[in-house]
Length: 188
Ligand SMILES: [Cu+2]
Image 1: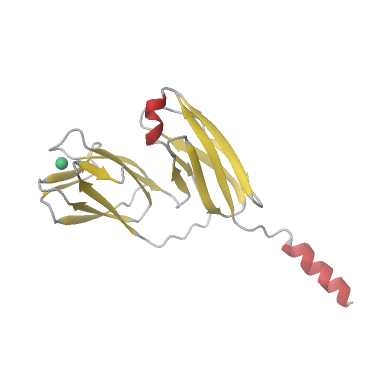
Image 2 (image 1 turned 120 degrees about the vertical axis):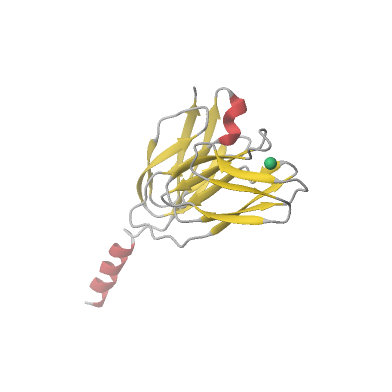
């Protein structure tokens, strides 16, 4: 009787997979657009999020980071560490937080999923992207096009890719034990 119980417990635990990860590579044609790529899981069921605040600085006439990864409900604290005034607005008209000087900051909550092109209307060369996902399973790519999404619960997902200039179809990826891989080729 005791042996039978042990076997049952072992059988149950073997179906409960640990969290896995998704890694892969992206290539882009033309390759100069590769740096602005985001790979993300479109939707994860039963996602419960605790809102976070992420910093985007304006320093040396650039936004840092260039790509901010958020989940819906998160806020961004926009800082200015330059000696000149900067503005914070999105090109789609979603928000314009105004213009302020060095040492000041303003916070903004992102309540809708999407990708916002983040600009400063005083300095047209300044550009960043604010990605707002349904969940936190998103990654930028490094200069070789590699990405990693960690801590993904076991399941089958639609893995999507975003780039301001290029496109590729999303892919079905199954995460069980260990690492799932995916490869994307972005083209116009
Ligand atoms: Cu500016």
